[in-house]
Every structure is written in C-alpha cells, then in structure tokens.
Amino acid sequence: MEKHDIKTKLVEDCFTQINNLVNDLKALMADTQESANEYGQPKDRYDSYRMQLLRKRDMYVQQLEKALEEQAVLKRIEIDKLHDVVSFGSVVITDEQKLFISISSGKINIEDDVYYTISLKVPFYQVIKGLKAGDKFVFNNKEHFIKDVF
Image (tube, rainbow, N blue to C red; front, side, top):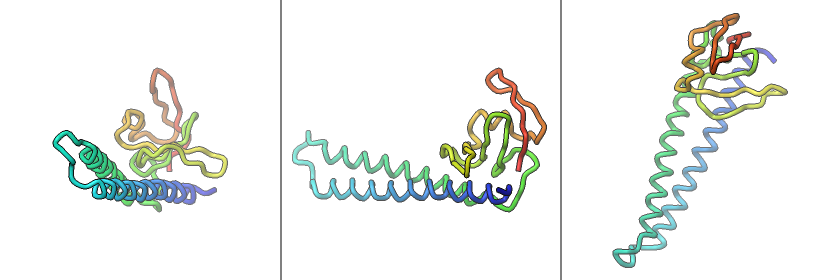
C-alpha cells in the first residue's frame, strides 16, 4: 500500500471513530433529557433523581464538545502532504511501532499493520517532534530508531 493511501485510510478511520462517538453521545444526551422530562419536576426537595439525570446529560455535553474539537483537529490534516519530519499529520514508522500524529483514538488496523494514533499532547510526541527518518531517540530509558516519516 502506498504512503498516500495509508494516510488517507488512517484519516478516514479516525473520522469514522469520532463520528460514531459524536452520534452515540447525541443519542445518549437525548435519551437522558427525555428521561428527565418524563420524570417531571422533583417530587420534594430531597428528590435528586431528576438532578442526577441532568448532571449525566451535562457530562455527555462535555464529552461531545471534546469529540467535536477532535473532529475539527482531524479536518486540519493535509492528507496529500507527505512530511519529512515528525509533525502534526505525519505517519511515523519506528523500529517498534507505527504512529499517526493526529488525535488519540487508539489503534487502527490497515491490512496486516497496526497504527497507533497519538495527539500532540502526549509525552512521546514531545520526544519525537521534529525528528526525521534515520534519527534515534530515547524514551523511557530505551533507544528507538525512526525508519520512516511521511
């Protein structure tokens, strides 16, 4: 599989994951709000069930906001741009793993390879930022080698 195709597939899979999360959170928010509305007003001043439902809905709202922010981050990735150095939107192949610098959404399988998506905020990215193919780096007292960046 060509580098451009790998990067395209990674971005598509990240979008699929984040879009599914957004849809799930919207459904959970609607269900929770509906349950709170059906329950009605608190029966007395010690009745906290409705308040618990509303707090749960607010928690889903916060998670949705974070998911929408990650969706916006993904939209900034230039799929056609191949990178020479490790930066946002690059794919990094080390001697131990394959990474996609974007958002933290776990692992993505492409054919027989596993790629791990990491965000710019994780310590590992801070160590490899700006490095290029052929560079060595140390993380957790272990030396690693960057085979390729694109």
